[in-house]
Image (cartoon, rainbow, N blue to C red; front, side, top):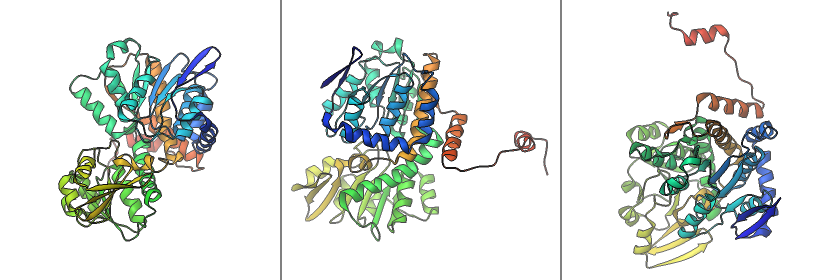
Length: 427
């Protein structure tokens, strides 16, 4: 733990190493140069400071892009406290810079235990937030355990990822969601870009950094064909891999088939796959029976939010020994074959690489910031439901992104708008 005194305000933090702060600052500066939409919002609101007096607790992957989001929130007047949303995804130099340079209370380091992880989450809520920013819903669910301590001050929260939205909609369905949540993940400018292009590139980046394996010619098995699975499948195919998709949803399976991929069951795919990448958000996608069928040398990686998709406990139980090959690869020896697991079955793009490129996180975090503004304006007047991003906000962010890329698009004439909005004109 550390403490910084700034203008008589004490900033508490728990990070790995304060000396890493300059490296972290350099990386946040780099990301900021590649996030023009979020920076334009920062510039727009830095003088009027609409978040003055608003306390924000964030639970997101501590990456250089998150550093830019924190800068934007602070620049707009918010009092910010932060923690990581995955035990292995924190970039320690970025965490150091957030504490030392940005003077933000942050509780995060890479490789924490489960107990420390939840202790950090609870530390980040000590500011008694008006607004929460979450990725996976762990922070939101923790607050619900002690909701009576927070209810009167909570205006609402946001959720960044598919898994978290699913959890919170389930909480709403049983009538136990106690404060409003904006589903940032469900914005088109988030899931159609962050999930598809971001995870598609960064998941393969993580596998390549961990293994330096050649994808070309390999049999790559992608479990799930949602936005994440689609992005990974297309990127793997682009590297020359033979991609097979496994699915439980017939519509998603049909999409994968018509996109040109082989579609089969995990039971069948487990016997011929060289590299397996899970993307479903479900547990035991690669279970005991699948592990028994894996061939010698199979590589397992997960791109879903939680480390439940690969049955790591089965690997542990069935293996006669295991060897740490490098920082991110564990080799399990079982039944005269070797199976390789990357990053303990946690998010491969953040455990073994740097996460999504800044350019796609630009739109995701612009949605986060604009959602925080809306919640601050609401001052707790919204009902405890999960809300979608307004279409107008999605289009505003997309247009800003296009303009930052010097791309022009057509504009409807008044006649065209009347035609599209009317019904009287037929054949």
